Image (cartoon, rainbow, N blue to C red; front, side, top):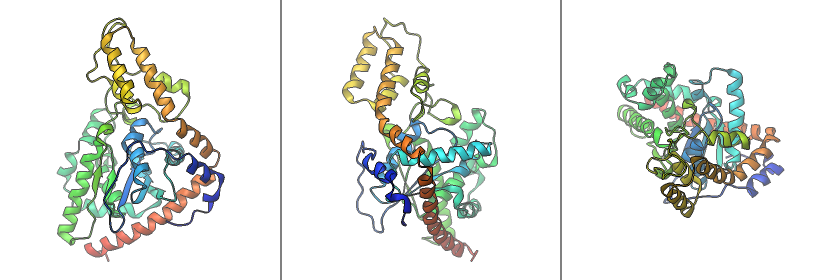
Length: 355
């Protein structure tokens, strides 16, 4: 994947020494050629714990299992971020987050989506075979519009560009949150359409990798955690500000002394992400017994959250002091990604008659 000249820096040793632990081992049968893994995150705001458990943690684990390509989806972010200054800042922050969470540039290709112009060429080719009726069925678009997000072509055509992101690198496996499963189905449909029309092997059929126990992380309002819904808990940040966000988790008005419902509890669902089985069982028992207020339960969530991400915060502080290292990782990653993208796009162009 190329030689990274800055990887002999103290920052490289720091990353190695503080590698994020694997909380669940993912094993796959040998794959020949090596399995190609791909995922991306949008720089549309501060990374939150839904992003981490839905995509980032599986990506860190999977970089040990195959040939990994991970990207910052800045084209996608343009559908929700309308400030150039904000977008540039978000890209830098997400690049740091990728590395702080444990992605290793010696094992994974990490790059920015907009550094690969071939992705838009492939998206256009895909759009020529995909019926509008298929896009109209995508619930993500309808959900966002229902929430008051302005409808535009980018938001509507998001699944086509996402498909191009995946197919441009011959990805076999795509770790995603459960909410993206339908978009992976659109991608697989597109592979079938293109291969049927222009020949088998034109595009590679990908599989989704979804961690069911953390497939949908609830936000502080109980809905799916999303920057679009402003209901997130940041992955990193100031202790006081994050604790304040935790205390806004929506609960009912049950009195302190009374037993509290445990079904569909956002507090318990969030606690399960970080606490061990014994601690979760104790929280459930305390809910049922009464005598504990929701403030106490929310504090427990905050405490285990804060401990869980201590290493990530420490690594992030180091990386913020070495932006040159981060920039070089992204630049070299783009070189590797574009070489692969060019190879795949040339194959597709020949198949469809553009070459």
